[in-house]
Image (cartoon, rainbow, N blue to C red; front, top):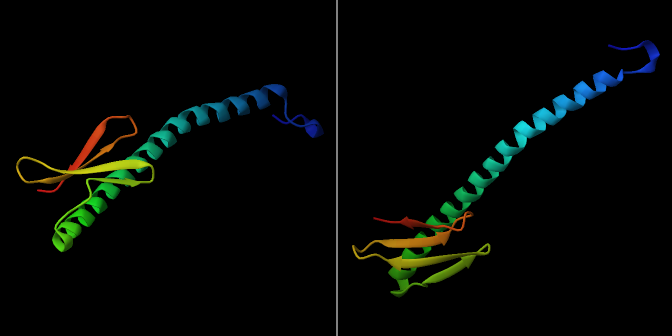
Length: 102
C-alpha cells in the first residue's frame, strides 16, 4: 500500500521484484527453446534448398557438389543405395541430421 507521499514500502518493492524474477525465470527457457526450434527449421529449409539446387545441377550439368557450406554449416550431398539423394548436416546438438528426397 502507498504510504502517502513517501512512495512504496520496502515489502511492496520486494514482492514486485519477486514477481518480476519469477516471470523472467518462466519466460527465458521458453524463449531459448523457441530460438532453438527456429534455428533447426532454418537448417531444414536450407537443406531442402540445397537438395533442389543439386537436382538442378544434375539435370543441367550432369554432376553435383558433394559438400556445400552455408552460414557456417557444412551440408554434404550423397546418393543412398536405393537411389535417393540426401543432404546430411550437423544439428545444434552436434548430431547429424539427414534430409532425403524419394
